[in-house]
Length: 256
Image 1 (spheres, rainbow, N blue to C red):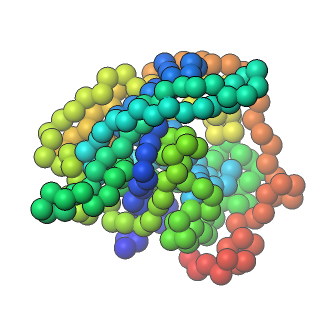
Image 2 (cartoon, rainbow, N blue to C red; image 1 turned 90 degrees about the vertical axis):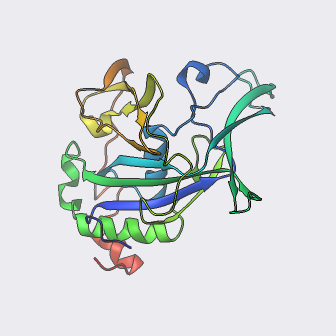
């Protein structure tokens, strides 16, 4: 199953609901989901599977396996002044049917391919850049369903992961040649990863081709960027708040 490069993982991601929040609705109480996962949301899933500040997860591609549906639900989020307030959220869901058209399962499902690169802005972690051990741990954590809870865009939407072969099985949009989604949020440039003490938002124009979306690399010149605010990077150190990957791999008993 793992004939991919030694820094790449492929996994199935699914759940009952998803909420990949459109930034235009993020500030107010009525949140609405994009129709496809954002790069930042899928990167968050990868970090929940396995993450250390030594590496940066890069999401390469996603396949949408079930035809998208939307569903509105009344929720009671916490109010700034205390207590709860009533809001209407628009979630994503979908349906899985058998060959006879009978409903088997409700929910969204995706296939994701991602790889990690070394975080060169963290000079103090140079000795921790052992890609084989990071890959071995990431693979082990994926097989166990992730190191932390998996969420599909927001904590309201519990998700699940398991290894898969990217491209296997037929998806709902495999025969749709091209679907454009206009200007969409891509992700954030954090100072921990860029080395610049600023928070920057990225935007792009995704296109799904035959059920597959190939993400632009965060460093791509085609991405639009907007400065948000100054932000200081968090300091990490192998002798301070971080366990070396060699020790962690030995404790888990993983083999490169």
